[in-house]
Image 1 (cartoon, each protein chain N blue to C red):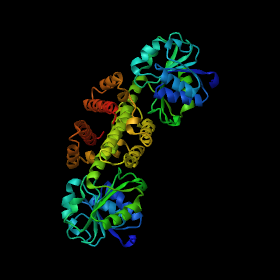
Image 2: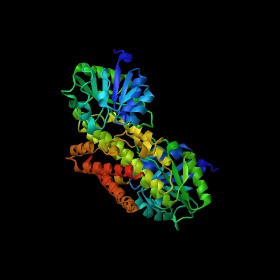
Image 3: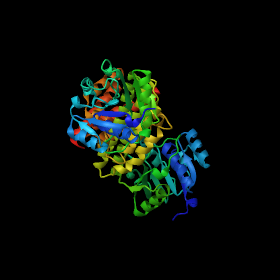
Image 4: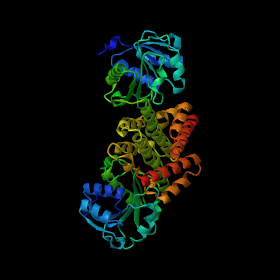
Length: 265
Length: 265
């Protein structure tokens, strides 16, 4: 076992994932040495909650850390990595992106991998890491076991996944989380327009999520699209006439539910 | 207060809503006298769990009940109602449909209303009625207060809603429940194709539902569409190339999330 106090960590990025991860690692006794963010505001905000150093300049990233965790937008990941060349060649380097392959590290460092925390992080909301599944990949068995030790100190749900599998985890998570949350947003929009409280929908939202712990989503499906009740579907489409994008979403999803019903997915 | 044992109820319909409602009413001490369903199989199955009579013939519906609850497909509701003309003229008549106006009862009976339980019911899964909001409407203050007493014995969450409001509750519920559940179904489909367990998504699904208890759905939104990370979005669209309908859903919802971000819904 490593000595967590002497194991120093630099976080590159100060967005939702980096913020929660850095705080959780510190709470577990790791030494957070520095936060990098492109903007001073984010870097400083996170560094203050951690009581550690910060920088907005990649060249000034602490070169003596044991672990570098890069949590930045996918589009800048490779550029950021290429600017860490001055950092500790013996350290472990990780990124946290669902859709980026491990091989972005190849040829840059000796010890590297990926730790993808599959959860939805918002800065305003605390995260219980016990309920965050981590999907890990590393470039050697030794690095994988170090990574398992670190991730395992945060969560009991630690899995291995290849870069290829992680891509599909990520896209599946976009549907299960980002798109279902957007369905809640549309729901709120429709209710607000008719002076109805979104709050009254929470029991329905909760039960919809709870049901798929016991039934498969296809078994759990209910509603006019499942029954293919064209009366209701057409009445709803008429109600959405003035919001053609919502009507299009309604039509497309109803047809797709019917497709899954009839092809026995 | 009514004497529940002497208050006899007929359920017209034996689908998901009727099944859970009839069982819950019986558990609360009401007298279930008869179940009607178009098919013998459904009528008999529900009547057996309740230990009451059943029929598949509308003309044979018990004419002496105090309450008639009609839970059938919207498309047949009016036809069914027109065939109950022989039943107790003093009884209370209810339907449970989100999208059907109360006025379908007008001119047919003296006492009528609607009790819309806004929840997702599956026969395979128990329902905790304490967590089912009921939206009520009745044709007189007396009938409303009787209805409040009946619904209030099942759930503490009893609201009033006009037929017009109920239409919007229903369509909003289709988005919050039916469509978000379909997002889980697509998620499972994508995972299965890559030997990944749907189970690993449950913490993410649960947290997505829990978040909107504290944040509005627009605040709670995360993911590539919120960041409008075109790199990730295009990579995901490429991954879905062989399933053009999924690609279309992905594109449409990502654009719509971006629209809500930028117009500050």
